[in-house]
Image (cartoon, rainbow over all chains, first blue to last red; front, side, top):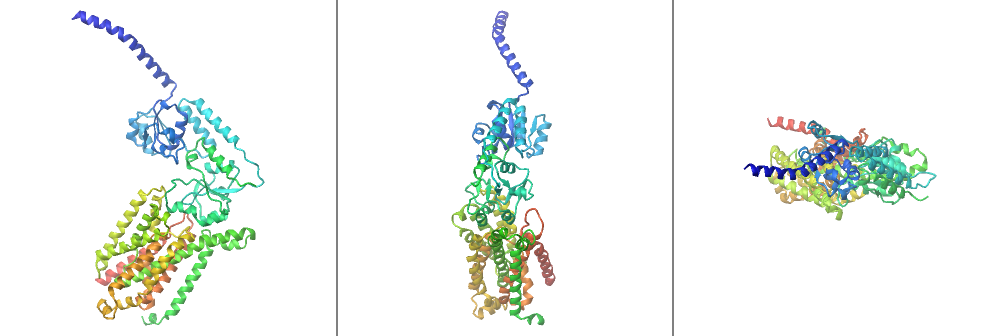
Length: 290
Length: 335
């Protein structure tokens, strides 16, 4: 019995040594990543954090993205989101992913955020971006949290280059335009649409009329502002509702002398991200030739 | 009573018509910001012409005309139903015909029927209205007591509203759910001339059919047997009115949503003025309904609020206390 035992021990020793070594190296690697604080199981619970996460993280770092990220009308990164499991920001769902970082927005349910924090999970709230400066801040903030600072800096640099590349012909008089969404909403001062309009050589008549943020505008008020062009970001093409029918009001077509409303997809700015440059390019292209 | 009888009917008609024209003109001039039209008339001329004309013809004119048509329809239908069922509470709002029409319109609008075929909207409204009305009528039975009629009406109304809310939740458009309030309370904001053309044929046809029933309704006040002996075909009268109401309410509600209480309040207010004759009450109630809806719509525009208040909110604020008063009074007369 003893002989067999000693034989067994000897044998084990030979097998265990390399095993122990690999275990040590794995542990070392784990502590290393922990020290560099780069999370490996990131869960994003909001469309906007999804976008930046998908742009910045290594594919292995992403554990789950929100279900909305698959929706191509509002998610710019819908294609790359397809390979990840989705969540609906429900607590039980999130626990299953054993996340080491949860990205959320102040618009997520506050009870989810406090509960996850109480259980000891790291939840980072990313504020929605209302300006291009905000977008840069958010990119850098998420990049640092993912341990991808260089990638974040590069993304910001590319965005700046793309913005600079959009040529705006200087005009004697900037044309006046505005946004008109289904249900009669417009974008005033302090919105991405406002900044995009101004950066693409337009005057935003809504903010000049004193509108702040995203607000309802009366059809008559809109007509009196006399925009030469109306933009919208209506989505769900092919569906019908009274809200959407408002955009086909005959008065609007008379006003812009038959120029149809230009649709600029929501995916460019429902969330602040570098894709805003594409919206600005489209806006600049829509300017009337003088 | 005698003094009321002696009110000259023609004078009453002319007064109401003048009031209506006056209100319609002020509705054209007054906007969400008070008096901008008059201000605009005195502003620099190059800015004035085109935009002013555009607001007048494409925004305010359809709004005023649609409010007039819808208000008149509701007043007229209220008067006709109260006359037919000889029941003070029989109105489009309470007997399900308005919510049935809204249900039909919701089906046509949100599920793509009316984008392929514009007239699908009022036609679906008419069918919904007729179906709801006939159901209430069958549930409550002829000569129903006030309570039975209300109960049947409440049941059908609730069912229609529940289905509207379900369908709006299932509708493919992401904007649909938020429009529940509109269908429940009604609005005439931001409508176009297209909408007017959609509602016009059914409304006018329904009016004509209804106004032809005046004599029958007068005879009906003497009781069904007497009316029959006077040569009134009761079955025919009933169906003619049901179809007329379905045509008019179906068309109006599918454009404005169901605006409450006008059909209830207006005939009651006007009844003493026409010497309690249901036949005469029809035209007068139509005028009164149009006046009431135009007034409510004017008030809605002048109330300062971030987004416009639905016009049905105002008609309900005026109408609900009146409804309560009616119930209290009818309870007193029963005991």
